[in-house]
Image (cartoon, rainbow, N blue to C red; front, side, top):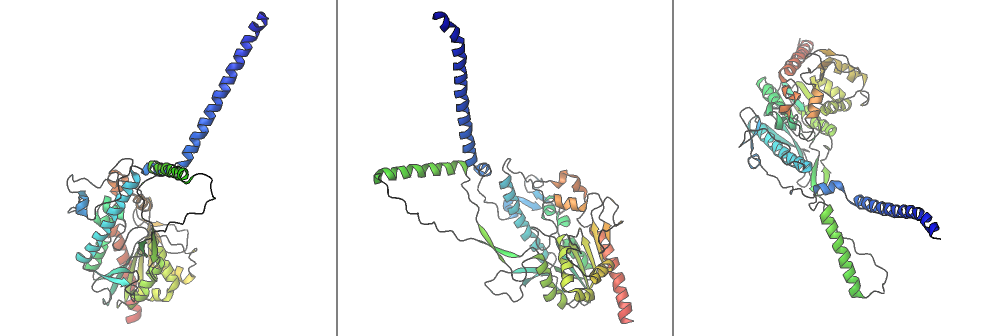
Length: 428
């Protein structure tokens, strides 16, 4: 009997080890399942926000401790350094909110420059707006409507930029001449143009949503538990929920807002059409010239679709830069396509030297190179990447976004050639 037990002991020992391992494995699986369940309940994005500082930022450049120097560059007033996006490491959302707050101040700063440096005034839209409806505006030079000869219309691309801006990030990271329309405006005024600065991205008024009322508690089934015990249980569960919220969710909530569209100006296309009908078409200038960037080019082509004959009769030339238009998707007429061939140029990013003719896939306006010191499209796209410092990037070598002098010279050459032909045909 003893020999039998001795022989069976190793087998029992092995069985015991196997059972213990199985039990341990089961326990580990239960722990893993519990951990996965816990992680599934945690919003990791919200967890990262837990230690964010409040979204309260300065309201002026002075409070931000930044100023534009004599070269139009934004610099810190104490260190003299360019703007730093990552003011706080590992707090990307907070840094982005800070950047956006600075961007709003920059927008107001550019408005001031348009009014004080360029002597332009606001014209509010819609022109027949009431006191209680949202409005937008454009900027007009003193002679925008009365200049009998020449009118220049500037149309920006899409995004956060507002009147007077080509690219906000260029203003912040490079200089005012690169990111604003002011060099164009000044040059135009010197050359005797009236000027209209459109504002195609000011499409709505953003207002805070009213607070939602708390829903009434749903009736519960009657319970046999004493009321005092039920209250203690409810308090305990409520405390657990609050602790969970405070531990794993960001205590600061962003304000919920809603957008109220501006009448007849709810999109870039609507805005350009409205300004044409109520301002450009009523201006005294015999010759209208248009400069449009990116989505502004699409909005111009849509204007042609809606007011083809008016545009053909008034507009002498159009300078586009990386235009987003598509004559097929926008279903332009053969007449519009032919007109664009004769009256438009589109400067696009290319490795070719500046103004080199490029092959076009569509039968619309001629495409020419914007030169590849940096590719224009890549450059402007990079300008929207949070935290990019142009001063440490190859794009820092790029001149003003639309090769201002060369573009202007090409445009004026094109326009005045056309104007001369018009005068020969109409007045001789």
